[in-house]
Length: 127
Image (cartoon, rainbow, N blue to C red; front, side, top):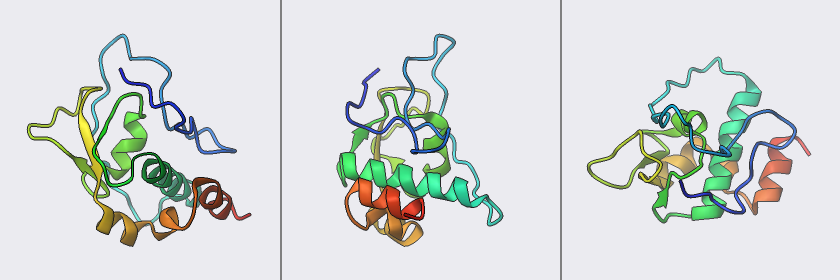
C-alpha cells in the first residue's frame, strides 16, 4: 500500500481522518458511492471540502493511486468529484487509480480551490 507522504492525516480540529496508517488485515475496504443528502451536518460538508482541497493540492488533475487514502472519506466524493482513472476499476484495491473530475469538483466545492491548503482549511473552519 502506497503511503502518500505529506498528505494531511485528518481534518484539523476534528476526528475526520483522511488517511489510514496501515492496510486492513481483514481485506481492503471497497470504495462505494455514498449518497450525500441536503441535511448533512455542516461539519461533514466541511470535511468533504477539506479532503477535496487536500486531494487537489497533492495531486492536481493527475491520476493518483488510492494507497492509504481513507475509503470512507473517498466514498463521499466517489462517482462525482473523484472518479476511476482506469478501466476496469477495482474498488477494493489499494493500487486503484483515481482522478479528480475538476469541472464538477469546482462547481460542487468551490472553496476547495481558493488558495493553498492552509488558507482553505482556515476558511472552512471560519478563521
